[in-house]
Image (cartoon, rainbow, N blue to C red; front, side, top):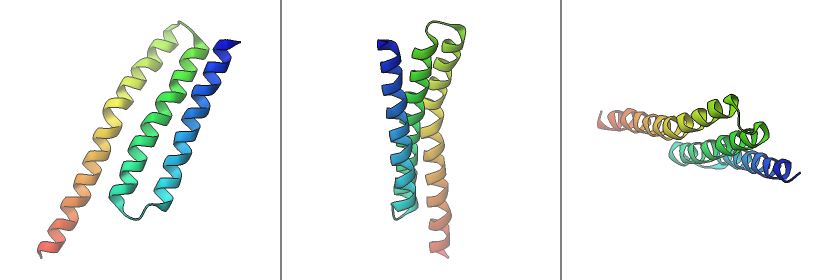
Length: 98
């Protein structure tokens, strides 16, 4: 009973952050703030949902795999967002120099 309640709280929290990130992408004015919104909210949303699934599964091999996915997301999402923003900056900086 308590495990299901904690799982639901994590999953609802993850859905909340996905929703906030989506609204941020649609409403924010430029690419940098949109990228920030997407990186922070998508990473946290995915991690919370995966933690909810880990709580649902209990101690199992699948939970270990989900934990590895969480670690992979923590490393790759911010790195990818940084590289996308840097590429955007470099592209428009070169156009201004012309």
